[in-house]
Length: 352
View (cartoon, rainbow, N blue to C red):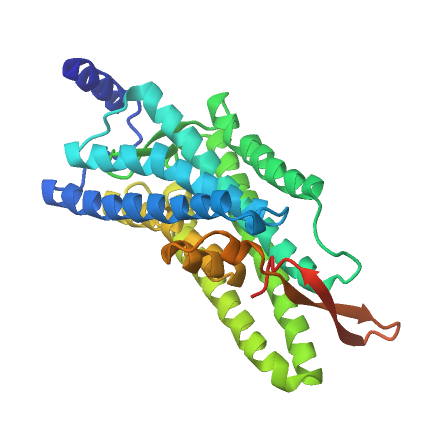
Protein backbone atom coordinates (compact mmCIF):
# COMPACT_ATOMS: atom_id res chain seq x y z
CA UNK A 1 0.00 0.00 0.00
CA UNK A 2 2.79 2.41 0.93
CA UNK A 3 4.61 1.67 -2.31
CA UNK A 4 1.48 2.56 -4.28
CA UNK A 5 1.24 5.88 -2.48
CA UNK A 6 4.91 6.61 -3.11
CA UNK A 7 4.57 5.72 -6.78
CA UNK A 8 1.47 7.87 -7.15
CA UNK A 9 3.14 10.82 -5.41
CA UNK A 10 6.28 10.43 -7.51
CA UNK A 11 4.18 10.38 -10.67
CA UNK A 12 2.37 13.52 -9.55
CA UNK A 13 5.62 15.33 -8.83
CA UNK A 14 7.03 14.47 -12.22
CA UNK A 15 4.02 15.34 -14.36
CA UNK A 16 4.35 19.14 -14.24
CA UNK A 17 7.74 20.75 -14.09
CA UNK A 18 6.44 24.26 -13.58
CA UNK A 19 5.40 23.72 -9.94
CA UNK A 20 7.76 24.37 -7.04
CA UNK A 21 8.73 21.22 -5.15
CA UNK A 22 11.43 22.00 -2.61
CA UNK A 23 12.56 24.77 -0.32
CA UNK A 24 11.49 23.50 3.09
CA UNK A 25 13.71 21.49 5.39
CA UNK A 26 12.46 18.68 7.58
CA UNK A 27 12.16 21.19 10.41
CA UNK A 28 10.24 23.55 8.14
CA UNK A 29 7.69 20.88 7.29
CA UNK A 30 7.32 20.08 10.99
CA UNK A 31 6.67 23.74 11.83
CA UNK A 32 4.04 23.99 9.09
CA UNK A 33 2.47 20.75 10.36
CA UNK A 34 2.20 22.23 13.86
CA UNK A 35 0.39 25.34 12.59
CA UNK A 36 -1.91 23.26 10.39
CA UNK A 37 -2.62 20.93 13.31
CA UNK A 38 -3.69 23.87 15.48
CA UNK A 39 -5.86 25.26 12.68
CA UNK A 40 -7.39 21.83 12.12
CA UNK A 41 -8.20 21.35 15.80
CA UNK A 42 -9.60 24.79 16.60
CA UNK A 43 -11.27 25.25 13.21
CA UNK A 44 -13.12 21.95 13.53
CA UNK A 45 -13.96 22.59 17.20
CA UNK A 46 -15.26 26.14 16.68
CA UNK A 47 -17.47 25.15 13.77
CA UNK A 48 -18.66 22.05 15.62
CA UNK A 49 -19.84 24.35 18.42
CA UNK A 50 -21.85 26.29 15.84
CA UNK A 51 -23.57 23.11 14.64
CA UNK A 52 -24.31 22.06 18.23
CA UNK A 53 -25.88 25.45 18.94
CA UNK A 54 -28.08 25.18 15.85
CA UNK A 55 -29.20 21.68 16.80
CA UNK A 56 -29.81 22.48 20.46
CA UNK A 57 -31.53 25.87 20.33
CA UNK A 58 -34.67 26.34 18.25
CA UNK A 59 -34.47 30.12 18.55
CA UNK A 60 -31.41 30.08 16.25
CA UNK A 61 -33.22 28.29 13.45
CA UNK A 62 -34.37 31.26 11.40
CA UNK A 63 -33.80 32.10 7.73
CA UNK A 64 -31.03 34.65 8.21
CA UNK A 65 -28.98 32.34 10.40
CA UNK A 66 -28.89 29.79 7.60
CA UNK A 67 -26.12 31.89 6.06
CA UNK A 68 -24.10 31.52 9.24
CA UNK A 69 -24.65 27.77 9.17
CA UNK A 70 -23.58 27.71 5.52
CA UNK A 71 -20.31 29.47 6.39
CA UNK A 72 -19.63 27.02 9.19
CA UNK A 73 -20.45 24.06 6.93
CA UNK A 74 -18.01 25.19 4.24
CA UNK A 75 -15.32 25.96 6.83
CA UNK A 76 -15.73 22.55 8.45
CA UNK A 77 -15.45 20.87 5.04
CA UNK A 78 -12.21 22.79 4.45
CA UNK A 79 -10.88 21.42 7.76
CA UNK A 80 -11.87 17.86 6.88
CA UNK A 81 -10.93 17.72 3.22
CA UNK A 82 -8.14 20.29 3.04
CA UNK A 83 -6.31 21.04 6.26
CA UNK A 84 -6.20 17.35 7.19
CA UNK A 85 -4.42 16.30 3.98
CA UNK A 86 -1.99 19.23 4.15
CA UNK A 87 -1.24 18.39 7.77
CA UNK A 88 -0.47 14.74 6.99
CA UNK A 89 1.52 15.64 3.87
CA UNK A 90 3.75 18.00 5.85
CA UNK A 91 4.37 15.26 8.40
CA UNK A 92 5.63 13.07 5.54
CA UNK A 93 7.34 16.01 3.82
CA UNK A 94 5.59 15.42 0.49
CA UNK A 95 2.14 15.28 -1.08
CA UNK A 96 0.65 11.85 -0.35
CA UNK A 97 -2.56 12.02 -2.40
CA UNK A 98 -1.27 11.31 -5.89
CA UNK A 99 -2.21 13.07 -9.11
CA UNK A 100 -5.98 12.51 -8.93
CA UNK A 101 -6.01 13.31 -5.23
CA UNK A 102 -4.24 16.58 -5.99
CA UNK A 103 -6.90 17.60 -8.51
CA UNK A 104 -9.66 16.62 -6.09
CA UNK A 105 -7.99 18.53 -3.24
CA UNK A 106 -7.54 21.65 -5.36
CA UNK A 107 -11.12 21.57 -6.59
CA UNK A 108 -12.99 20.92 -3.34
CA UNK A 109 -10.93 23.33 -1.26
CA UNK A 110 -11.23 26.10 -3.83
CA UNK A 111 -14.97 25.42 -3.95
CA UNK A 112 -15.44 25.45 -0.16
CA UNK A 113 -13.25 28.52 0.23
CA UNK A 114 -15.19 30.52 -2.36
CA UNK A 115 -18.50 29.42 -0.81
CA UNK A 116 -17.32 30.89 2.48
CA UNK A 117 -16.15 34.13 0.87
CA UNK A 118 -19.36 34.65 -1.09
CA UNK A 119 -21.44 33.80 1.97
CA UNK A 120 -19.58 36.48 3.93
CA UNK A 121 -20.43 39.01 1.23
CA UNK A 122 -24.09 37.96 1.24
CA UNK A 123 -24.10 38.12 5.03
CA UNK A 124 -22.81 41.69 4.95
CA UNK A 125 -25.74 42.66 2.73
CA UNK A 126 -28.19 40.80 4.98
CA UNK A 127 -26.84 42.59 8.05
CA UNK A 128 -27.22 45.93 6.31
CA UNK A 129 -30.70 45.27 4.91
CA UNK A 130 -32.02 43.66 8.11
CA UNK A 131 -31.17 46.74 10.19
CA UNK A 132 -32.01 49.44 7.64
CA UNK A 133 -35.13 48.33 5.76
CA UNK A 134 -38.22 48.75 7.90
CA UNK A 135 -40.50 47.52 5.14
CA UNK A 136 -39.27 43.98 5.79
CA UNK A 137 -39.79 42.27 9.13
CA UNK A 138 -37.30 39.51 8.42
CA UNK A 139 -36.10 37.24 5.67
CA UNK A 140 -38.03 34.32 4.27
CA UNK A 141 -36.64 30.83 4.04
CA UNK A 142 -36.93 31.10 0.27
CA UNK A 143 -34.56 34.07 0.17
CA UNK A 144 -32.20 32.41 2.63
CA UNK A 145 -32.09 29.23 0.57
CA UNK A 146 -31.50 31.34 -2.52
CA UNK A 147 -28.49 32.92 -0.85
CA UNK A 148 -27.11 29.57 0.30
CA UNK A 149 -27.72 27.86 -3.03
CA UNK A 150 -26.41 30.87 -4.92
CA UNK A 151 -23.12 30.79 -3.02
CA UNK A 152 -22.57 27.14 -3.97
CA UNK A 153 -23.60 27.65 -7.59
CA UNK A 154 -21.36 30.71 -7.91
CA UNK A 155 -18.47 28.74 -6.44
CA UNK A 156 -18.98 25.82 -8.82
CA UNK A 157 -19.04 28.19 -11.78
CA UNK A 158 -15.49 29.29 -10.90
CA UNK A 159 -14.01 26.01 -9.64
CA UNK A 160 -15.21 23.51 -12.25
CA UNK A 161 -13.43 25.14 -15.27
CA UNK A 162 -9.91 23.98 -14.22
CA UNK A 163 -11.23 20.42 -14.35
CA UNK A 164 -12.31 20.81 -17.97
CA UNK A 165 -9.42 22.77 -19.47
CA UNK A 166 -9.60 26.41 -18.37
CA UNK A 167 -6.42 26.35 -16.25
CA UNK A 168 -5.79 23.29 -14.04
CA UNK A 169 -5.13 22.16 -10.48
CA UNK A 170 -1.67 21.11 -9.31
CA UNK A 171 0.87 21.20 -6.51
CA UNK A 172 1.64 24.53 -4.85
CA UNK A 173 4.16 25.83 -2.37
CA UNK A 174 6.55 23.19 -1.09
CA UNK A 175 4.58 20.37 -2.69
CA UNK A 176 2.37 19.45 0.26
CA UNK A 177 -0.89 20.99 -0.94
CA UNK A 178 -2.66 21.65 -4.23
CA UNK A 179 -4.47 24.56 -5.81
CA UNK A 180 -4.78 26.33 -9.15
CA UNK A 181 -1.49 26.28 -11.08
CA UNK A 182 -0.49 29.86 -10.33
CA UNK A 183 2.86 29.56 -12.14
CA UNK A 184 1.43 28.37 -15.45
CA UNK A 185 1.97 31.00 -18.17
CA UNK A 186 -0.56 29.72 -20.71
CA UNK A 187 -3.19 32.24 -21.85
CA UNK A 188 -5.94 30.03 -20.42
CA UNK A 189 -4.36 29.95 -16.96
CA UNK A 190 -3.57 33.66 -16.90
CA UNK A 191 -7.10 34.66 -17.94
CA UNK A 192 -8.61 32.29 -15.38
CA UNK A 193 -6.46 33.61 -12.53
CA UNK A 194 -7.37 37.21 -13.38
CA UNK A 195 -11.09 36.37 -13.38
CA UNK A 196 -10.74 34.37 -10.17
CA UNK A 197 -9.05 37.28 -8.40
CA UNK A 198 -11.64 39.81 -9.57
CA UNK A 199 -14.86 37.86 -9.08
CA UNK A 200 -13.99 35.64 -6.10
CA UNK A 201 -11.76 37.89 -3.99
CA UNK A 202 -11.91 41.57 -4.96
CA UNK A 203 -15.67 41.69 -5.60
CA UNK A 204 -16.70 40.11 -2.26
CA UNK A 205 -14.47 42.48 -0.28
CA UNK A 206 -15.90 45.48 -2.16
CA UNK A 207 -19.44 44.33 -1.31
CA UNK A 208 -18.48 43.90 2.34
CA UNK A 209 -16.86 47.33 2.59
CA UNK A 210 -19.84 49.04 0.94
CA UNK A 211 -22.50 47.30 3.04
CA UNK A 212 -20.70 47.70 6.35
CA UNK A 213 -19.88 51.33 5.57
CA UNK A 214 -23.56 52.00 4.86
CA UNK A 215 -24.55 50.12 8.01
CA UNK A 216 -22.18 52.14 10.17
CA UNK A 217 -23.38 55.37 8.56
CA UNK A 218 -26.98 54.44 9.37
CA UNK A 219 -26.14 53.67 12.99
CA UNK A 220 -24.20 56.94 13.26
CA UNK A 221 -27.19 58.90 11.93
CA UNK A 222 -29.41 57.39 14.61
CA UNK A 223 -26.74 58.29 17.15
CA UNK A 224 -27.31 61.95 16.35
CA UNK A 225 -30.99 61.50 17.22
CA UNK A 226 -30.69 59.20 20.23
CA UNK A 227 -27.18 59.90 21.48
CA UNK A 228 -27.36 58.12 24.83
CA UNK A 229 -28.94 54.93 23.49
CA UNK A 230 -26.93 54.73 20.26
CA UNK A 231 -23.34 55.46 21.35
CA UNK A 232 -22.70 51.95 22.62
CA UNK A 233 -24.25 50.42 19.51
CA UNK A 234 -22.22 52.75 17.28
CA UNK A 235 -18.97 51.69 18.94
CA UNK A 236 -19.90 48.01 18.73
CA UNK A 237 -20.76 48.28 15.03
CA UNK A 238 -17.49 50.09 14.34
CA UNK A 239 -15.54 47.40 16.18
CA UNK A 240 -17.36 44.65 14.27
CA UNK A 241 -16.78 46.36 10.91
CA UNK A 242 -13.07 46.91 11.51
CA UNK A 243 -12.57 43.38 12.85
CA UNK A 244 -14.46 41.81 9.96
CA UNK A 245 -12.63 43.65 7.19
CA UNK A 246 -9.18 43.31 8.78
CA UNK A 247 -9.58 39.56 9.33
CA UNK A 248 -10.87 39.13 5.79
CA UNK A 249 -7.94 41.04 4.32
CA UNK A 250 -5.35 39.34 6.54
CA UNK A 251 -6.67 35.87 5.74
CA UNK A 252 -7.26 36.17 2.01
CA UNK A 253 -5.49 39.14 0.42
CA UNK A 254 -1.94 37.75 0.96
CA UNK A 255 -3.00 34.57 -0.83
CA UNK A 256 -4.39 36.59 -3.73
CA UNK A 257 -1.30 38.82 -3.95
CA UNK A 258 1.07 35.83 -3.91
CA UNK A 259 -1.02 34.15 -6.61
CA UNK A 260 -0.76 37.24 -8.82
CA UNK A 261 3.00 37.50 -8.21
CA UNK A 262 3.44 33.83 -9.08
CA UNK A 263 1.42 34.37 -12.26
CA UNK A 264 2.88 37.64 -13.53
CA UNK A 265 6.22 37.85 -11.72
CA UNK A 266 9.51 36.47 -12.92
CA UNK A 267 10.11 32.73 -12.43
CA UNK A 268 11.27 31.93 -8.91
CA UNK A 269 10.06 35.25 -7.49
CA UNK A 270 7.73 33.47 -5.05
CA UNK A 271 9.62 30.97 -2.91
CA UNK A 272 7.94 27.91 -1.34
CA UNK A 273 8.12 29.54 2.09
CA UNK A 274 6.52 32.75 0.79
CA UNK A 275 3.67 30.77 -0.75
CA UNK A 276 3.03 28.61 2.32
CA UNK A 277 2.42 31.51 4.72
CA UNK A 278 -0.57 32.97 2.77
CA UNK A 279 -1.99 29.46 2.40
CA UNK A 280 -1.87 28.99 6.18
CA UNK A 281 -3.49 32.40 6.72
CA UNK A 282 -6.32 31.48 4.33
CA UNK A 283 -6.93 28.20 6.16
CA UNK A 284 -6.90 30.04 9.50
CA UNK A 285 -10.13 31.78 8.47
CA UNK A 286 -11.91 28.57 9.51
CA UNK A 287 -10.88 29.42 13.09
CA UNK A 288 -11.74 33.13 13.02
CA UNK A 289 -15.06 33.02 11.15
CA UNK A 290 -17.08 31.28 13.90
CA UNK A 291 -15.72 33.72 16.48
CA UNK A 292 -16.42 36.87 14.47
CA UNK A 293 -19.72 35.91 12.86
CA UNK A 294 -21.21 33.72 15.58
CA UNK A 295 -19.90 34.56 19.05
CA UNK A 296 -20.02 38.34 18.41
CA UNK A 297 -23.75 37.94 17.75
CA UNK A 298 -25.69 38.52 20.99
CA UNK A 299 -28.24 35.82 20.35
CA UNK A 300 -25.62 33.18 19.62
CA UNK A 301 -23.54 34.30 22.56
CA UNK A 302 -26.48 33.89 24.95
CA UNK A 303 -27.10 30.39 23.63
CA UNK A 304 -23.39 29.61 23.92
CA UNK A 305 -23.43 30.63 27.60
CA UNK A 306 -26.47 28.45 28.20
CA UNK A 307 -24.64 25.56 26.54
CA UNK A 308 -21.43 25.84 28.57
CA UNK A 309 -23.43 26.27 31.79
CA UNK A 310 -25.34 23.05 30.99
CA UNK A 311 -28.67 24.83 31.32
CA UNK A 312 -31.80 23.54 29.52
CA UNK A 313 -32.36 24.92 25.98
CA UNK A 314 -35.58 26.58 27.17
CA UNK A 315 -33.41 29.12 29.00
CA UNK A 316 -32.53 30.61 25.62
CA UNK A 317 -35.35 29.45 23.34
CA UNK A 318 -37.91 31.67 24.97
CA UNK A 319 -35.90 34.86 24.69
CA UNK A 320 -37.06 37.51 22.28
CA UNK A 321 -36.09 41.10 22.02
CA UNK A 322 -37.04 44.34 20.41
CA UNK A 323 -35.08 44.94 17.24
CA UNK A 324 -34.38 48.49 16.25
CA UNK A 325 -34.29 48.99 12.50
CA UNK A 326 -33.04 52.07 10.76
CA UNK A 327 -34.57 53.55 7.64
CA UNK A 328 -32.67 55.91 5.39
CA UNK A 329 -34.82 58.06 3.12
CA UNK A 330 -33.29 59.87 0.16
CA UNK A 331 -34.58 63.40 -0.32
CA UNK A 332 -35.16 64.83 -3.76
CA UNK A 333 -32.46 67.45 -3.24
CA UNK A 334 -29.91 64.81 -2.33
CA UNK A 335 -30.06 65.02 1.46
CA UNK A 336 -30.62 62.08 3.73
CA UNK A 337 -33.09 61.75 6.56
CA UNK A 338 -32.99 58.98 9.09
CA UNK A 339 -35.42 57.61 11.59
CA UNK A 340 -35.61 54.48 13.67
CA UNK A 341 -38.43 52.10 14.39
CA UNK A 342 -38.75 49.41 17.05
CA UNK A 343 -40.20 46.08 15.95
CA UNK A 344 -41.49 44.25 19.05
CA UNK A 345 -41.09 40.52 19.66
CA UNK A 346 -38.72 39.77 16.80
CA UNK A 347 -35.95 37.22 17.22
CA UNK A 348 -32.59 38.87 17.74
CA UNK A 349 -31.09 37.78 14.44
CA UNK A 350 -28.43 40.32 13.86
CA UNK A 351 -28.26 42.51 16.92
CA UNK A 352 -24.67 43.69 16.80
